[in-house]
Length: 90
Image 1: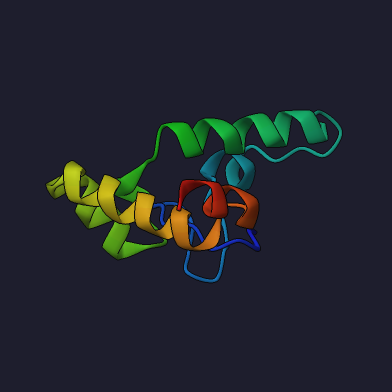
Image 2: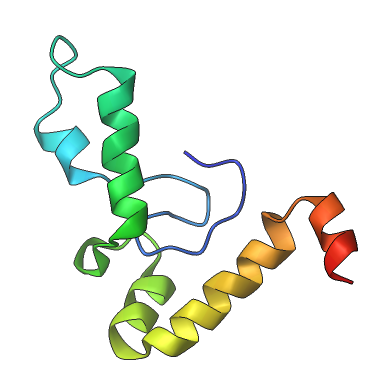
């Protein structure tokens, strides 16, 4: 799960991550930490809104990507931008 708040279809408001590959194909003898992080990275880059944990984000990304992008950017600026960078931007 994520500690930092994120607005993404496949991440719940509690920070839980929905990755079907890790649920269905999980084999601890064949998967390394690197593999797990790669799967999560790919999911973050290419969301799968049909399997949303965050229904609002899933619906918004499918119906109005521009609004989804604006909201995701807002959440990022509020919760995931280092304080030093916020100071420089202002």
